[in-house]
Picture 1 (cartoon, rainbow, N blue to C red):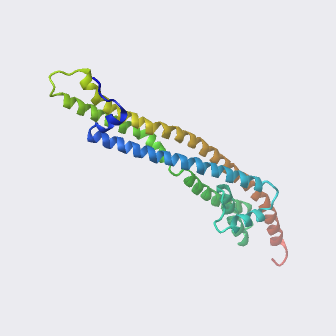
Picture 2 (cartoon, rainbow, N blue to C red):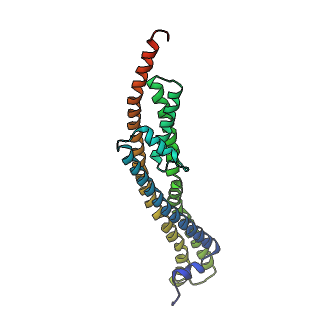
Length: 239
């Protein structure tokens, strides 16, 4: 009756299949914690970089100055929002160099460029988030598989005994239940982190979409005088 029921003993005495399941869940848990810590750091950096660029953008500097700062570094813009700005501004300037005077054409080109850049940024920000979702949804079932297999193995071993007591059944069932516990240990942090990161990413996405709309309005105000000047030039004699 004085059996050692510690977690380590239960793991060491579990069947081979259950031990493989436990090892897999532990590796998944370590990987998910690595993603969690990395994601916390990366999202914090994205928010800080976007906020810093927001302050510079609304500080009264010209669009040309902001664009030169964004493209002057060797590594390019550091903030996702700054890269969106650079993409829109670059396309706007290319269309102006081609003598495009229609406001709608200028804005559509800049908006398409910003949307493409926005999608690339969101893909980078959301990277590895699906891994946490998979860990949160699949780990309990993997642990349950180990538990079912361990209980089947335990009852198969008891089939040769003439007298079965709780003392003989308990160790095998306890070994199997450890797999479920490890599965929950891997799943719960992954689910909590996934939900938290999803909310943070939604806020970042809303911030960048709002910037696209605000910057489009600024470009529209800059494009209107250009269109008026082109229209006047077209109506002059000899043109």
